[in-house]
Length: 317
Image (tube, rainbow, N blue to C red; front, side, top):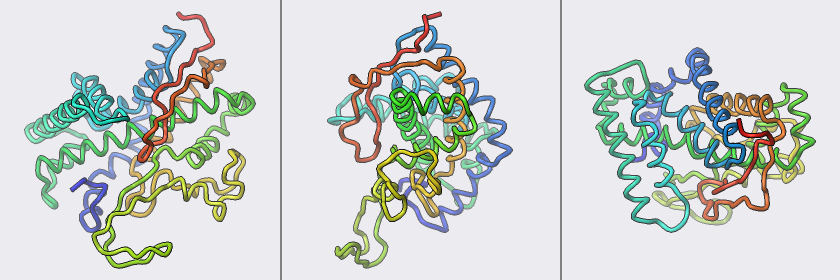
């Protein structure tokens, strides 16, 4: 079982309660310093380089490092874990390198599980390890850790790529946000609706049901395509138009819905807000080479980019 993504209540409810304390307003307030430090270090590196890649140097650096710190994952293994997942989830034809990298990621997460069983701390994995009801096996704990990490890595990373590429081309919108930072949250909400980086979720049918003229049976698998909802004209007028002044844009399903609504959405929103403010403060004139940006081709799960060449617009320091 892929925990917690594909389990139902009451087990899902129990698991959700175990990890929920890590996402309370108080816990997220404590994470704010971590988020700012990670973002600042990433922007420092960009300014030192001058030319950079939005995917490689921001989108696949900032979210995973914040996610691993939030999990309490050992600092000495964080870079190795990030590299392993980057290789394992590279799009395209599956390869031996990807399979080996994923095995390595599983091994690192299992090592983390064993470490917390022996020496529990004040973090998410320790809470999961210490729980007696439900008591989770090491393998289940490993999948919990990987799901939380990957979920907080790839989709937020893809969203950052989409957002910064858009702002790299829509200069009027960028200047509007630079001049009035209170609009950043509205813009982020519309970016989430418009781009929907997390494309789909898989679900298992629990009872016979007819959907769109198709008869489904218990046990059938369905792929729920979230952008179909986020671009639904019945829910959003002129749905194919990007508009930060749109009312009720927060009805989007970019973070899913129902019991499986993304538990870390507030942490993601904080990260996007801090990142945009830092970029607007320190490299407001950044440029992108949109004609050289390469999209993810097999975007059944994620809509993002393989690379987006860019420049800070400043001389390297």
